[in-house]
Length: 174
Image 1 (cartoon, one colour):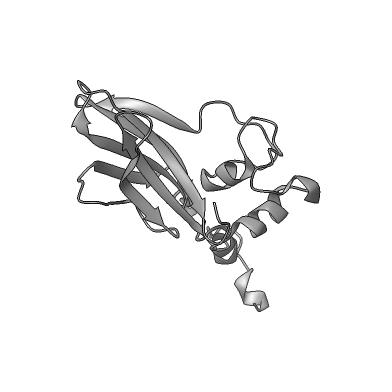
Image 2 (tube, rainbow, N blue to C red; image 1 turned 90 degrees about the vertical axis):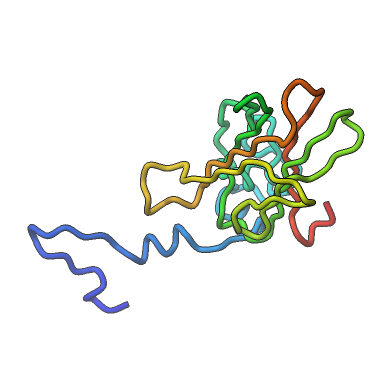
């Protein structure tokens, strides 16, 4: 970039488009871990570099810090129009992940009802039509890479029902 890319005149307003480009660049787990976690011995998917009980892979998937403990559960249940739902954040830059919202009535057999693959928005799967909403988790539109996701089950809450979020990193064998 030449000098003109960073020049601002006094009294004018502007922003650096290069910085926005860096924020929204696709990434993978290894890149995230190297940027977030200074100790190479704590960069594994199952390690908990932040000490908050959340493995690094889930911290990466949910747009959390790799080293700063963050309070609160990674996924939160809610009820919406008499149906169980699950809400969580996802990082749309994480292009090596597959996210699945799964349901079960017995905690043994789990069925995916919604999926997001490789940074794309969630979509219904397996013939189900859950209510899905995604919006920016940030008030700042230029850093809207963290998405707030809400998925509402297809069965009313009068039935025994459980929901979970499953995250798989492509190429990790998990």
